[in-house]
Image 1 (cartoon, rainbow, N blue to C red):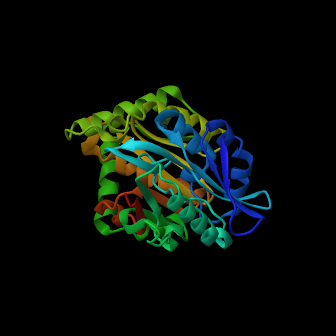
Image 2 (cartoon, rainbow, N blue to C red):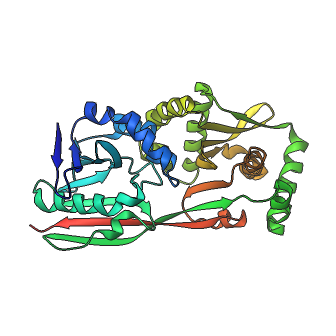
Image 3 (cartoon, rainbow, N blue to C red):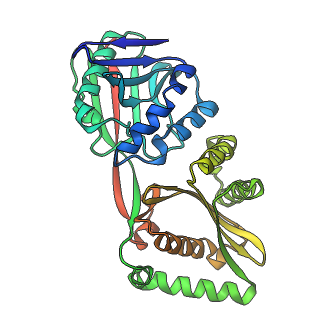
Length: 340
């Protein structure tokens, strides 16, 4: 069912979509919308979010779609579900995505917020909205408390990205001395023991995805932790989303073979001018050889050779990322609660 609110003008309406078939019908318009917006990422695309819903969706869809003269101007994909004893409205994609700022045309951000705020104030079937991984300048900054709503905003876990400019040689020379030394020694040590081969695949290799999953689990098991894939039960999601990304020519699987065997893998996503480092895994048996570091170096070389303008490490501000020239990408979280 699609419910509608019309209050600003006859030409403007907010649709609230609560079933998958109506949401799926938006796909062509949704793709058209995100292609017009300059700052979208893979995590706001239909291919990513439909796949997320098929694996993690529960409760009921609560997708907000803003239309003006029948044209889609913005979409905020959410779902309503029970969480920790409360009825929560959550952004679709939460948990395994890193950028979830809703795609809304800049000229319609205020209208989207006004319409959503009115809907939330008038609708009693929810208790809290917890929206994470939003942009630092999120459109939800315009949402204000009042009319039975309490709106709180705080910083969320940041991302980090390397801006790529000039040549790869210039980039390499600009790395810290200790990192350049480690990279040189890693390569020499590994090559004394066997061959080291770098490659990039743009198609799905089932065996390679299985190796990625097993190496990722093995690496984290060494530290007594499950790792992201196991913790989020996202093995099936990872396989399916890889197939969806291939259709859009967005999948990049960077691999490093040592003695003919896969020793390190990066699950990368190429979108517009950025390469997103979604998941990294390496064989803990060869950790002393620094093969994960070597793979990252060769993968960044690839991004220069293919004229990308950024390498995005995504979530986390670990120290090593800044050695590679990464800069912080701050993010926000917005929590809206409804008065009892």
